[in-house]
Length: 258
Image (tube, rainbow, N blue to C red; front, top):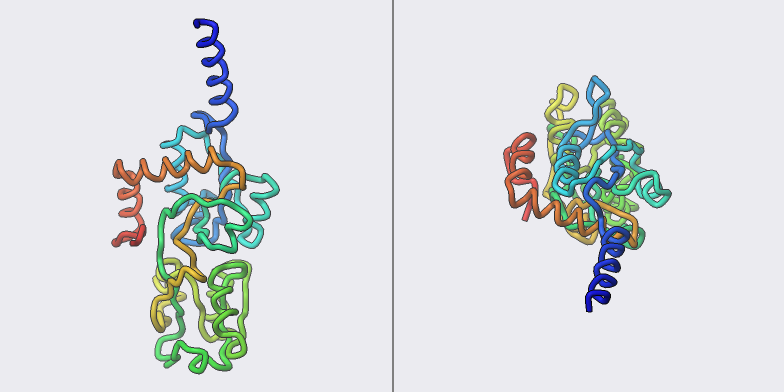
């Protein structure tokens, strides 16, 4: 009997060591560093933002040793699949298209998209109202897909590598309007000196068909233990007040959403 128990204990130990995510495990986190207030690089070259604070809190909750890797947005999923990092924490929306390539945790926030344009533009947000206009959007985003699916033939979709590049062309007049996450636009553009003459136009957009089920953490398929550990960490920081403290640092509303 003792021999059987010893064998079972040995098998369980090996299983835990080889299968489950371990405390002290080194985890590389891919992020963009160009999407304030969620992730950006400050004047000292340090990664900052809501995504970064959430990532650090999750690593603490899971007992992981984490390292950040900065990656251009349009190469984010390819970089994950190439094993440049183990998880993406970069305001990536959980969409059916992306779930064909990667697995996602549950959401860690959910905010709507909105159009924005120069104050007094009089733009009506509809295919007819935007007919002939140039709309700026970040490349390889849910917002670009939304434009292509709903406004193709009415507008010229002008895509950019970063959201900041889209803002620059809107300010210069090379684009008539833009669409992006409403919180990112408010903090990264409308709340700045460059964006003072611009405003939101039209309604919120949050249809899961295009915008998914909120922002989640992406991992490679087959990394179930890491996925489970990150989901448990999200639950933990939501329950112990850590999430609320980070939320209050950046927002005066509940960014987690409904």
